[in-house]
Image 1 (tube, rainbow, N blue to C red):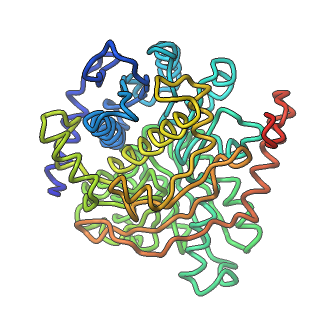
Image 2: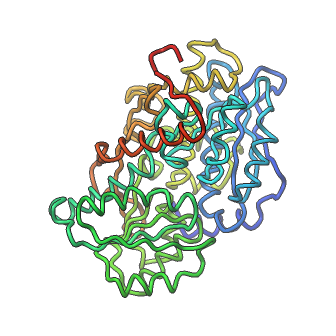
Length: 445
């Protein structure tokens, strides 16, 4: 892929994207039975560099599924709602779209931790599941309390523990973490703060000298933050950034001479638009991931042929395979396979939120099935249960070599003995506070 061209096109998309509330990908025959799938997006504003490729991946994969006949013959109607990463506008999108389609929205994928927090209680009332894939409220991993919320394949707390585990390995063992300085540069929002409790617990457990440095929205001014980093002289920096904040941080880190191979971005801080603007200075920068990068899978070839080749691509063909484009694709793989799972129980028809929730909770995406989808080895197999809506999925570290992302580690299993008790404790507290009864998960509830 030509990343300079890709970056310029991404910026152009952000500048010229429509400000209309919704855009729609419609099945071939709008009068037929179909599944309604809303998509909250941000193709405009400071977060567009990340929001655009994700939205394009979502749209292209649904177009691919429809081009191949839909799910067991049932097409999907995808409707976008632009909310500019503003929580209040995102709630308006939810309220506007939740009742659309033959049976209402099947599932919401908010692409915002702040918006996810606002939808948790609404989901109970409206009976619409929310899939906050790798983001949102981490405690929602406990399905006994958060019946309608799913955050698989992994969470911010699992990610943070995997990063510490990776750093420990790089330092020669977890016992070598004692006295090491780690700085967490984070977006000063519910999203950015989500990893902090895990980092604080692990810092205490392993004797890490942890410093938390917030960056206010939108993150275009960070000189003071990186002057603090220079003063602290950390051994490692971990970043939970988003949008323009990421590329600014990488440029500022380079300006103070911080070694890029000691700088790890989380999975929302590690895509092409984050590193390309920094040029050669970004070489060596690392990031976490729970799926592959690039366009070498058969599914990508199908998208290029059946979607872009037919003039239905949501964005430039050069963007196919970008990290966040792939994440949008993976999000829709989970959604569509959950639809397929639900149809095994409820029949080949439009799905309600209640039926889709069952499909999500009984999703068993095997390695064999991923291969059938043209994504063999792209992501890990996953099996969801009533009790576990996250699965504590493994994380991998990738590294920017100046032209592309390459793997810098094997799959890292999060520190579940630390994370899961935290999740259950937080879920229990929420259950008590909100008077939400805990499910037994014995098949009766």
